[in-house]
Image (tube, rainbow, N blue to C red; front, top):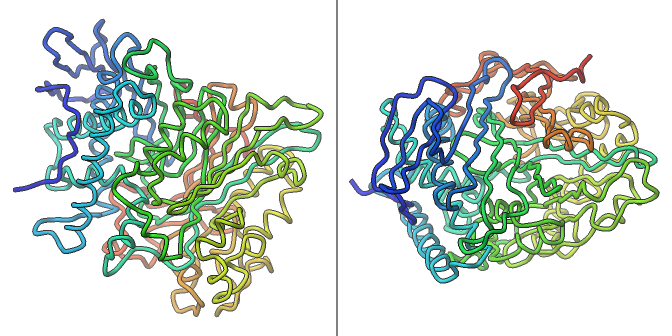
Length: 557
């Protein structure tokens, strides 16, 4: 049976497998035989050490911490990290794959044939670039992403309990594509796509307290509820900038929210030991003429974000690095905050504190947006382009003409709510309250030309499951769906400097609404798989820094 393989870079001919019952695993590497060995016992020739705990039923999150050995080559570190993650998180990967159920079984449909051909061309092109530019910093980090992916798949498939029928190699690679796939469906003319008209994807807010008393960065992931199997991760990979250099990458450690089988965030929300925080919200592209710029000679979005995370020291460097080889898929507005430039009580914010970047097919625009942050005291982000040239090129004016100001940057409900309520933020508790806000039945800014006359989409943290199934809505985003804000992540100057810590809550918002519960919803398992999910999502606020155990955070006291 033919399968779609991603083994572009092979550095191991055999991996010994062991039964893993503990939450700590070591990957040993024999430099003579070039063999890896998985063990639960600490070893001197370790290539990677990983700690994992599944607390999904207790806190809404699983937890994963991976560290690699700086004495070893980049390739060995990357592969060992993936090997450990694939082995430890195999069960969650299998469950998550069943929930998102993106399969292309043989015989391939015409669309799957086109997708397979596109990805094969893309992978072959990436390999040619890494082979040609072996001492190039950018292509070294691209290669290491694929090395880690190869380790992930080997760690997964070498687990003797692995239910191989649940996932194939095509599927495991597709997990790395994330929302790139939604755009590839449009580019490659899938007959029925998963895109919903106007569907929002994430809310984000950068907030400066009065007198520059603090700088808060927060993100709420909006997505389908079948994706609520989540992992908080810490990666400590002391890579060199290239295979011939002794210099380390600027960011060797990152903490972030993620999913089983993903080697990046996908939300995206990263804290980096370079002093940067990078996050994004999806803006999308509705101008079909721009899909012509999507070609296989590009680097997909999730990989570019990880390369930029590792190599950048400033927001401008992050944006410049990310701009290389734009895929035109998973099009987002990125916010890059540089905590190195912020001090409490400073007279004014320093240039470069905030960099904003927007990507659509064939176009990337970015600039230092610190002045906007100074003038307004906040910078909001949601699913509408901020830069006029991006808004116009991506089809924004046409959407406004068809549906109204809901599709405009200043007129959409989230823009109005952020503008009205950001002034109420004075501490972490009030910031979390704003990011979890949804009072759609009573807030006039949540109203729409609908029946009933409001939608739970029109909030900072969406709850489309609460829209009545028999309601009448002008476009799909406002409708009854198993979709909404899944979480909240929030950091501050103090939290960031405590090992890149952040607070996180995994649940659709229940502040003003009833908690989400699968057994009380009208969503069938067929339309909304939920394997491995808790039934009730009413979890507390948690503190995470990667090294310490997950623990509740006293913000709710």
